[in-house]
Each structure stands twice: as C-alpha cells, then as structure tokens.
Length: 494
Image (cartoon, rainbow, N blue to C red; front, side):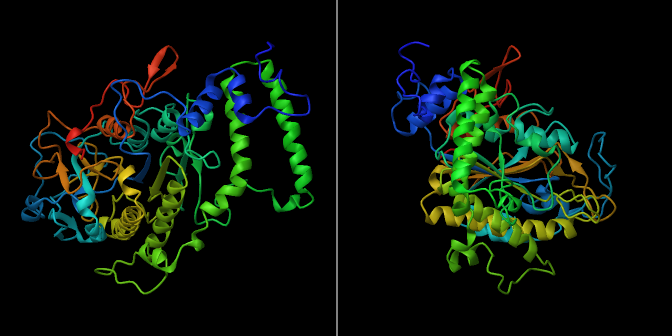
C-alpha cells in the first residue's frame, strides 16, 4: 500500500468514505460509480466531441407482454373492414404459429380521429386521444421470431438468446445514477406474474451486477422484498444493526484489499449499501397515498364510478396499471433513470393477457382500456410537472397479431409487423413513421422496415449516448445494446 492510498491517511477507527473506498478498490465498477457521482456534480470533462446532445434524462418503457394487436388498437386498416369474413389470401405461403389463417377479421372496435393531428385510434384506447399530439407512432416494426420467449428478449435486450443485458441495464451502465438512495433501473411487473423469460429480460448479464433491474410491486404490502427486517427479527435493535453494518464493511474492505479490481465484490458492496439507503428513501417514493385526490382521480385510482364503452369493465386493469404508472412517475422524479412497466402476464385459463388466440375482445378490451387510461394520465402528469420534455416514453410489445382469424374470435402471432409509439424526451409528437401494408400483415415498404435496433439507437441518442460507442468487452467481443445494427430515427426527433 503506497502513501498515496486513501487507506493510509485514515486512522484505524475511521473507515474510508464511500467515494474513497470505491475508487481505491481497483477502478472497474468503483471508478464508474465515482465517475457517475462526479458527473452529477459537474466535475467531469465535457462529453467527447461528436457525442449527441442529450434531450432526455430518464426513460419509461411500457411493455405489453404476449403481443398486443396493432390492428385493433392503433393501425387502422379499411381494407380489413371491407373484406371482413372473406377468405384470407396473403399472396405468399405463411407459416403461422398456431395455423391462425382463417378469414380476414376487421378491427374489433371502431376507430375515430383524435387530437390536432387527427390520428385514428381504436375506441378501446380512446383515453390516449387526450395526449395523441405528443405521440410518435411507428407502424412498420418487424421482429425475427413468432415465439414469445425469443421475441420478448429481442425487444427487451436486443438479442433473441438469454445472457444479454436489458436496455435499462445498458442505460444504467452508460449514465449511472441520479439518486444514490434509489436504484437506477426499476422494474414494475404485472401483478399476476412475470413475462416470458422472467428476470432475463431485465438482468445485467455480463455487465456489473448492480445494473440489474430492481423489482418493485406497488400493489404489495411490501413493494420491495426484504427491504426491512422480517417481523420475526423484532429483537434486532438499531444499535445492533449499525454495529453489524460496520463489521460487514470492515470485512468487505479486508476482502477487497486482496482482490483488487474484482467487479463482483464492488457490485455486491454497492447492492448492500443501496439496500441500506433504500430503507429510508423507498417507502417515501412508493407512498401513493401521499398524492392529492385530483392526481389519484387522473390515474383512475379514486375507485369512483366509471363509464366503460360497450360492456368493457376495465376497473381492475385501470387500478393495477394506474398504480404502476403513478409509482413510475414518483420514482422518475426522484432520480430513477429507467422504469420498465409490464402489462398482461397471466398464464391461467381463460387467459387474461395480450396473447389473444381465443378471444381478442375479451382479452384486449380491459387490458387496453386500463393501459390507455394509465399511460395518458402518466403523460399528462409528466407534462404538468415539467418532466415530459426530458423523459422519453417507449410503448412496445414483442410482435403483432395476424389480420386473419383464429377460431373466429382470436388472432395468431404476427412477427412480420407491429406498432411502437414514443413520446417526450425530444420526440416529435403527432406524427406517424412507417406504414404497414393494406392488411397490416407486413411493412408496406418491405425493404425498409423499422427494427428494435433502430428504436434502441434512438433511445440512447436522446439520452446523449452513441449506440455504436456504448460497449462492454465480453468473451473477446465488444458487445452493445444494438449488436451490429441500428440507426437513429431522426425523423422522429423534434
């Protein structure tokens, strides 16, 4: 140990500060953590020449697990209305996931124009009409697989195989935290369960472990598992817990001194430190009861009388999705960088998720209306708080659904085309980029589709990150979120 070491300057009874310890533990994650903190203090040099100027500071991703039908929500096709019930003819052989190649099926709900842009929206997502002039739709998204697990991973991580970091993990790695007392990347799962692949969608994989998503359940009595001592540990005193923390810190420092640069240890230390700080910060951030009545009413959380179109009772879906949206807003305004909100994970039967093989009206109706109410409230709430301009919102799903019927009421998987929409964070609202063909089967311009790599490249660009330069060397390869693909969708930018 040299005389320049921060350890050398400290008396034995005085532990190093967190910054000193992380920096002295070998660079790696420690150096990255300190760099993030100094960056918030404006102590680092300006971004490298040529780096994009950031328009966004934070991201929320709404993920509709199971494959939401673009045809019944956002992408109106008059040709399907005209040919409803006629035998489908795709003009080419089609390999359907469950042979859902019955007659053409018109949209299950009527479409009407909304906003100054006149965007046609299904009546089941009509609440989004209040904010449609803020939204940018992409109707020519394409995937690579019609299998849920592979397609979900592709949209969440940029790869079809497990073992790659989620998009939120890359943002955490690239930008660091805005609040040392809360996680950088938070995941709000559906209250009924996980999507395909479970935690692999938000795991840090080969990135340092602290960049994994932290699970939060706003509906639960304990929104974050194991944050506080179990009720059986009532004998633990505050003084005893503080002594235990000091002992663990001493053991960690001794362990770190013999393993310089071990990122696993750095990550574990940061995780435990964060958990301790979250005991104070997280309960306040997740206290939705602190919100005034008019905000709860905006999100549909007042439990008052509701009016739903055409026998759709979406009260339960509005309650659950609205709570996640409100929790997301509270987390984002307190410094969380990336919040992922999942919808529609239910493997019971009859299923209640977006994978509507049996009955689109039954499944999509409540889910879509609840989602639209919560998402519209979230956008309006961000706007009135001045947060929309630097918060980027991405709505996605793993693939679309076929324009033909499956069993008369359902739709099969369609990886060939589907819809995303973006909002805020320097995105130009009230526009549509890319079209699907007359039946919503494939992109109208099949030579120039939009891919998840393009969406991710644009997302990173708005955060001030060049997607080709945000890399991590793993097994001899400089990995990145966009693999070797991706282009910034500049026509979406304000």
